[in-house]
Length: 455
Image (cartoon, rainbow, N blue to C red; front, side, top):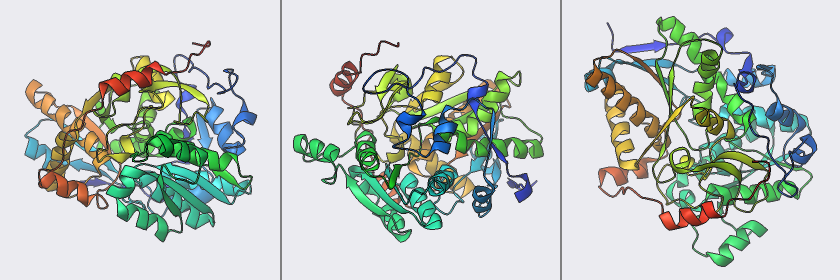
């Protein structure tokens, strides 16, 4: 049998609806709260930031929401994406486990992020919005929204975390190629940015700071809305096209995952592949194990508190209940910039609190080691963020080897590492360090969590 086993779907097999896990949760989630009043928010509270169709999706409890045909037509450029059986990796690990990976790096932007960038741009354009402001860490999200802006003729302003802005210049170039403007955050363009720079002129920035800048721009301009690449309910829902395609492809393989692994920063990648399967499990299906893998230097699920917190450093966003390290927490500048957010998606946080998923944290060198092992076996060089999922999947395969079990492992290879070669150069040169967060700074950030009567 060939070592290369690829499962492809026809365009007609691409999902027509997004899956909404809110319909199947055994316990409802805590509501988002207004940052001023502390009361549950309504659609009007979110209207300055998002178009009404996305607000409806954010608050929806319907199991399925239709994907607009214009959005699906754009998706056809690269979707459905391939599912691979990693036979060469299995041989390299000498494991009885079967390893499958869904490869999202075939999108024009090179990651899974266009799955939500395209619909977000579509709904904003339909409401007459001409400009979007956003943040980005590693640049995958900024690149994807820039791509969507080019397709819909919209201006895109991207506030990129300063340490990533310096580490990943090619991502900035890609955004500019699509017509977007990319600014290092914190910047002097916003009150939020200027306040940070006044206290910390050499700040590396954080996703929380960059969110504050983008939200400020959107809230103060009538022609501009805010777009977010992870965390929120509608964003995770848009990514479920990944897991739904996986279900059809695993059927083609005559298999079903015992374990699903995803990397987690804000939660959209993990939710996208895991939630369709978790929903099936909650409706009486197979007892699949779900593992969310995060960086040890920014360990929201494994170290953070499950509490109400702001989504941004400037405290402009609603309060949401999530696993958080505190909105003022600034992680060290490790290379997986897309996983450096202080909080975790409320939906992912909620299902972990219910005991429905597990989480693990790894340092970056062991993740890069796993990514290189994967590349030498399968030929695809993962993004630093995706290396966390690779590490988690390899460890599960080695567990199967130790226990003599032939389990089926599925993970989301959410993007390629072609714009991250400096990180690999640092790794091969022995210059990639395992960075740890400052315990004192974490304690201070957690001590500053808002007091919420609703808890």
